[in-house]
Image 1: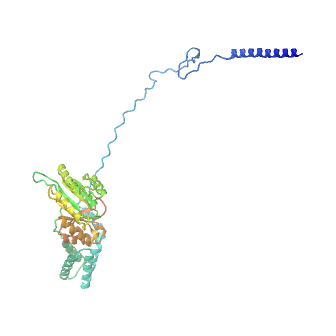
Image 2 (image 1 turned 90 degrees about the vertical axis):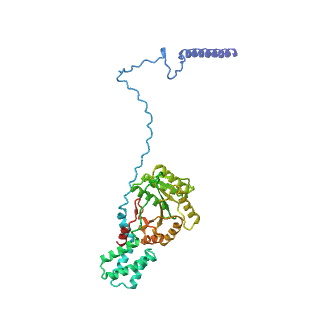
Image 3 (image 1 turned 180 degrees about the horizontal axis):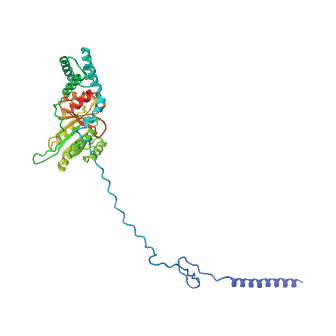
Length: 397
């Protein structure tokens, strides 16, 4: 019995093996032959080649031309040339600014006219007139002179109409301001001799009076008068001073000579005049550093600047810039500067912001030099040549 079971098992095993071989054989015959992987972009031949596609044909006219290569980059545009300012003519500036001046100075003129118009001019009235003049910084001596002259003329005049009083006051104030002083700015080029040279103008003053701004405005005055100007930035102690002056100059086409920050101011001034001679400029305008009138060393340095510049020739103008609002303190400053350098003229700034127009009289009496320019505002062309008659008209309204 055991032999029969063993025989059956062997037969089943052999039958299964034979059927597996048959199935595997069929599977081998049914599998397709392995294909060679196709690389993208390679051409195929024979049975592997794709059927050709029909492409539309185009004529020569229909074929677009290749785009032209971009042109070479355009050259960078040259920086735009700044249009120069045309400064306002100086002849009519004070006329234009008279109303601005009269608004700030009218208290003096109105006060005097009101007092002189009283029916009876007693001692108290004359003392009030003196007080008005002193408050306006006319100064003690000029005030006493004016009061005595007014007393005499009012007695002779007798009855006083408003128009007569106005004419009287106008005449006496004009005399006090002194129209006989030479207020000419000497800025014309020197052509005599074998070595023509420009006129040299030094601008001096204490700190805080707006000296560099005044120098820039003065450059505009000179350009308006037809001068070719070269600027010297001899204020080397204040970092922004040279930049500020150069900006003013560029607006009217005036070149600025400058030196290193903290450098020798006398050297810069010397170089500026040297360049002015080489370029044939009419005027060299030198802005010096602001300095305290109480500092002996700084004042001596200012004297050195003037001496060094004079190696090229005499200095034509030394203009002292004074702040009109400082009043009598400005007179102290003026006296010290006049001892160091020979002041030839005064520039009074901020005269529109004070009712003390009498400082014009006082400073002229103290120094014996004329007020040549007055500043009446923040505008670029608000620096005007001083005209005594126009100034007095503004005082009395």
